[in-house]
Length: 162
Image (cartoon, rainbow, N blue to C red):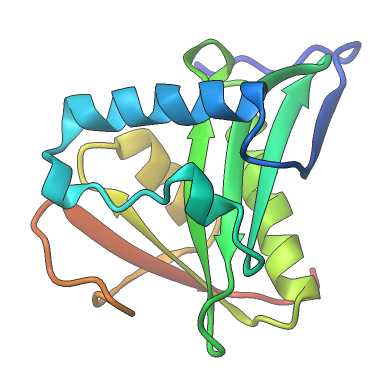
């Protein structure tokens, strides 16, 4: 059963520099989590330098000022934007933070003119897969530079101004 954020707790999600202490801490926690699930060759995460590139917008979710989640959209391709580095700290899972970060990424991609949002996630992350499916993402073939990988799941969603 998921925990809901308390009404008195403020969740703020905005673009931030990935090369700052709170973001680095979240990225390191994400790396540790993924390394426990997948071999290095099945990990397709962007590093901090790549997250700071102009075509990437990196967001941090703060609950009462404390960084509890992050996510980025990469806009390297003309035909779609891609979600990268979507992560929620263990102590904030089940509170709706992930859903709010995902919605923020969708809105940011749409505002930048994209109508398709894609992602790659791992098959050993059922909560993430469930979140993406419940948000309207559907499975697709590998895209971009990705190759078929039995540990990867590729998904996309058509965006609208809803």
